[in-house]
Structure formats: C-alpha cells, structure tokens
Length: 463
Image (cartoon, rainbow, N blue to C red):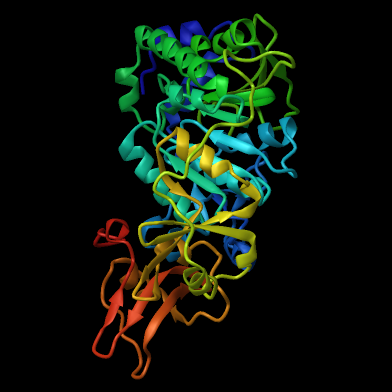
C-alpha cells in the first residue's frame, strides 16, 4: 500500500511518529479482529469463548482480540447480542468515559454520530440502569443499522434518533455527556479499506475539519454546564484532531481533561497548542487501527452558545397511556415490570424506564425518534402480540414458554425457515440458543410461524 506522501510529511513533527514503522505497518496489512462482550448478557458463555484463546484488549474490560476472523453471520450468539465486533482502538472510549464522568450515577448521554453502534453498545454496558442514552445518526440508512444493533444488544434505556446535529439545540443544556466520533478523512482506516487511500487528499482533510467544527458548534448548546464532551476521529491529520481540540477550548468554552493511559499499550499522548490533551493510536505502536480521542469539560459558568436550562416544553403528541387492562396484559410478559412506565402509540405498547422521569416527553417534543425504550408488542383483540425487541431485551418474564434449539436449527430460524415442533405444542414461545434469546415463534394447530424480523434474516448461503 502506497501512503499519500503529503500525509506522512504532515506527521513528521508529531510526537513519537516514526514514518518508517508507520509505513511498514501499512505494508504488512495485518488484519486484526476484536470483539466486545455484552455485559448484560454474557454470563457463563463469555468464559466458554475465552477458553478458545482470546487475548484481552488492555484498555477495555470486555474487549478481546481473536486469533482469526470467523464467519460471524453463522454464529447464533452474534445475532443474540452476546458480543459486538468492534475495532479495538475505538474501545478506548471506555477509559475516556470512566475517567471523566461518574458512571455510577444516572447520566443523560448523546452519541451524536452513533452508527453502526459500537460506541453506543459500549456505553450502554457502562451506564447505570437509570441513565438515558440517545443514540443518533443523521443518515437514515445508517440510523436503521444503528437501531438494529441496539435492539440486538438489549437493555431498555436507549432512544435511537435520526437527526441533524443542529436539531439538538432544542434540548439546551440537556445532556451530561456528548460523544462525537466525527466524520473524517479516514486515514486511520487505510489498512481496513485501501479504497480510502485513493479518496484521501489535503483538500478533503480541510473540508472535514470545517465540517467537524460546524457539527460541534451545532450540538454543544445541548451540553450542560460542567458536562463532558468526548471527541474522536479515525484520522491522523492534526487539522481534524488537535486543531479541533483547540477550537473547542478557544471558541466553545471548554477545558481539557487529562486521561491516564494503561502502561505498555503504545498509546501516544499529545498536547495541542492550546494545551488540550489527546491520545493517538498508531498501527505500528498499538494493536489496532488509527484513532485520535480527547475529553473536554464545558467550563463552569459558561455555555457553548446556548442556555443551560434543564427543562424543555413538551407534549405527548400521538402517545397515550395504555388502559389499565392493557397494562395488566403487558406486565404478565415482563420481569421487574415495576421498573417501567408504559406508553402507547396506536396499538403498540412501549416500556420506558421509570427512572427517566419526563425525559422521553422532552425528546418526543424536540427530535425525530426511531426507537424509545423497548417495544413490548401490540394489543390485538385483548391479547399481546410480542415484539422482537421484547424477545432480546432481557426483560421477558421467567414463566414465558421457551424453545431451545441446537445450532443447526438456530441457523434455520435465523434464515426465517420453518421450525418443526413436537405435537401438542401451541402458542407463543421464546426461541433460544444456549440460553440466549433469538426471537419468537407461534405454534398453531397446523404450522409454526417464524417471527424473526424479515429484514434481519441470514441470506448468505454458505459459511
């Protein structure tokens, strides 16, 4: 792989940058595969996976390197949300969050550029149950992928949105933490996607830098006084990294937070012209791809261009409270039903964490929401038709009938093929593989209906 000369030239004065080693790392084209376990679901299954020789990612408590890349498509536990396939460097977000915020208390968190879901699923595993995570992507197709991955991950304290950064200005001072993994020129991903080398140019770097400043200026009014911003890119260019940190300090009233880096990891600490601490991941020094990340705090007594008010006028819009009889039906399907409030849209019933208070009303009044809490299902003719979100949420009551499948039948289910049951079985059943929920089937007198989402089915023919 031939790297752009103007890129390596621009990095020659960067701390600890070694041009020869950097270029050799790209010539080697080492393929690194890493996963992160779902702390809400892993349990004893994580131990079984670790027995296969995985090595821990040193900066992420649930991250592991794989010796080789398997066919994740044909692992039912991947579809069940046991783990997420995530690039190792980006898992450093865990360190940035743990060292800059109190994750043991409820937090309102915005993942502004959330797709495909690696950062959001990581944060959901770290945040307290009473926290609110708003996971957003401005591109509709990417927001759909984000929603799918968060549904599979489970947990009910997430709202998925599809909004432009400036839309969040309506939520002035609402968030305690904003994470922005900004669109960038992509030089940190050259090894994974060589096509990006052809697309890279100094002009594009400058355009990306300007766009990053615009994105941050648009969204930061939604951060409360004293709130935390985690900013990152997969670019090596100073214009998109340290220069953006300086912009945040100079123009957006922010102050830097220095992080402690685990020993012997190869992560390089940098200090910008305005004194912002940042952390660079070079592929010749770190077992991972290129990354820059920095943590900042909105200065006390300052705002990033907007009011720091914590209340927002709101309206239920088309949402209403289910009838008492409908709530009673829904609660039969849930464990810990008292931890939730229920709202209804047409026939659909959603479970909203009671700890959110009125937060979802503020969101409904201000931004476009694709998913809020957990969709339990639809009330039809006095009975619940359970939704897939409920199946994989971890909220299903213990008494609900279950169907445990072997690997072959689990793959058939995930392909949305017919599942055969023993005679006499009827009604809704939670489909499981190795104890992990995959979805629903309904046994009728003459057939079994497979309710796995059509758009998510496995269409690949061979492993």
